[in-house]
Length: 184
Image 1 (spheres, rainbow, N blue to C red):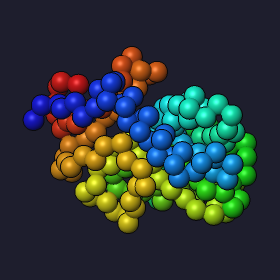
Image 2 (image 1 turned 90 degrees about the vertical axis):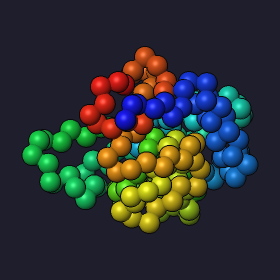
Image 3 (image 1 turned 180 degrees about the vertical axis):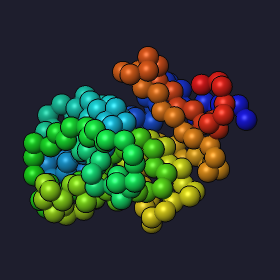
């Protein structure tokens, strides 16, 4: 099977704008809401969401942070290599706030479970919502469903979704491929 482009740069920008308007519709001026993007790859998506929201709502104070879930994962002790966590950058309390968790790809749901545990170090939220760029809706291990979705992708378990960001990869695009594909 050849690699298939799921989203290109133009489609990604349209999705970012749509998702931001959905957030504004549900969170108004963000006075009681915060955004937490998940390290490492969800941060690129979260940065874009926060930037776009600030452009649309320049008067709003958008609390945006980055959350590392490395040591909250249920599989972190199963690896032979030493884990190097990413930084957590949350300079606000989430107590009684509406939290929007942001990640790039939702697959099994285990990262989101870890994020729910990790964010409790910053308070108990009133509500938690989930935004993902790509929802791989099959093969969930946990009952997790996103509130905001960029694109839903139906795939088999042998396929992978790879998100390329301009900041690190030189180009925005999302592809679906099987690991033995040479084209990427």
